[in-house]
Length: 109
Image (cartoon, rainbow, N blue to C red; front, side):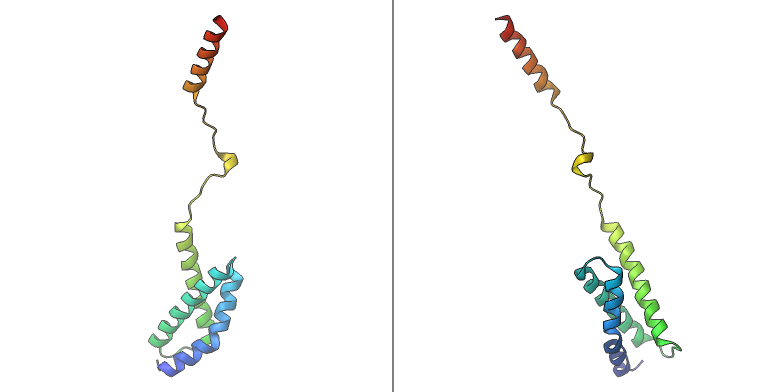
């Protein structure tokens, strides 16, 4: 496709991409990241395709697919860390036993 047309479409839909990303993400920074990914993918796709009947629907589908890919990628990178209340308290039984032995020796004396 023509570069000028792709540039025009991206400038026209860039705010809509950000709005879509902002509605899907919990933070402003994540929304910016997602919107930039959507914009890049849309631009590359616009340069590759020729005739599309419904541009708005086509670009929305691109945004949705990029969002799905982004969510899957984020899920891979998340790690589940136990909360402090879930941590098992480990006792040093050897030190406790040694203290008891010492106390019993002191009591004998």
